[in-house]
Image 1 (cartoon, rainbow, N blue to C red):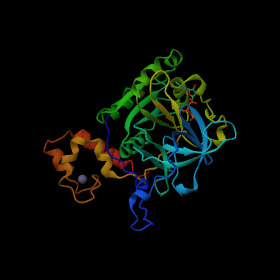
Image 2 (cartoon, rainbow, N blue to C red):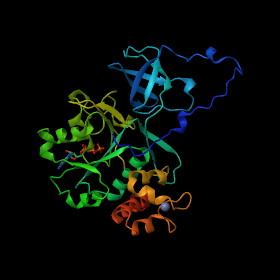
Image 3 (spheres, rainbow, N blue to C red):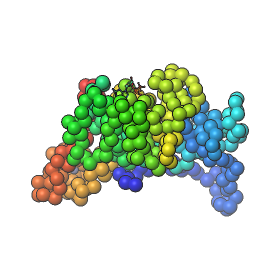
Image 4 (cartoon, helix red, strand yellow):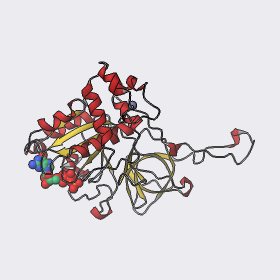
Length: 336
Ligand SMILES: Nc1nc2c(ncn2[C@@H]2O[C@H](COP(=O)(O)OP(=O)(O)OP(=O)(O)O)[C@@H](O)[C@H]2O)c(=O)[nH]1
Ligand SMILES: [Zn+2]
């Protein structure tokens, strides 16, 4: 698996003073030794549906977790009634350290980060080739978020029955991004799902896309029949309606091991949280060229050493251009 960078989640590093002073460490036992492991499938107004063994269990966060929130994809430990029966409520007592964190801010000037999905290793960026028109800047912003989170991006271009993909793909050639193109008739006969599934096997893939691009249609083709979301986003796990669904939803991939994590349609992708030093990790051949950069270089400023280094023939200028294009998406423009 290719990874673009580590994503240390500061939240997970707990600095707890030792209240017992110098008492021997053996006296400190892990709490809740009997807790069972589960995975968060969806979150709905403070209630988390977790998969424990093979059953969905409704749970809430234990007080002792404080402000730390569990999100979809989190591996958690639960205690209490884990039968999954009606009207039971278990408690989440621990959240495991996350392998990755996909974040977004509602707006660039909104410092409040939302952790959208934990532990994904791939980001499927779903874009229609027409109806609605593709928005390259939105795609670029999703790419930046993927690189920042250490997720490998996959472009999923839908509705190729309405418009051809070539022109849009040209833009992404130099980025070396994997892509898959689908069209309406291949949805019905299963070919679209077969082709997309190849990229999802053994992985945890978060799906993002603008409303109306056909994300739900595609996700339904990829997950078991009884887990279908109706268009209008009825929560397939809790069965509740659209107005309650603001969370992502993890669904098992049908026909192969893997997880599909559907996220609500997005209109924008705020990048307030993005660190440019991580975006360059998606361009490994450019990294040695940054040795001559000023400290904390954004790689998109006049003193950046990459211009001279690339001019000397060390790397393809088109790749530097692509890096700059992605870095520039951090500045918000009308319609992002
Ligand atoms: N022509 C064409 N239409 C498609 C294709 N895939 C989906 N659609 C249609 O596009 C519309 C939107 O599809 P959805 O799957 O609801 O889109 P979505 O991205 O989930 O949108 P939200 O539910 O708003 O987030 C529906 O009318 C689909 O039938 C395709 O490959 N070709
Ligand atoms: Zn630089």
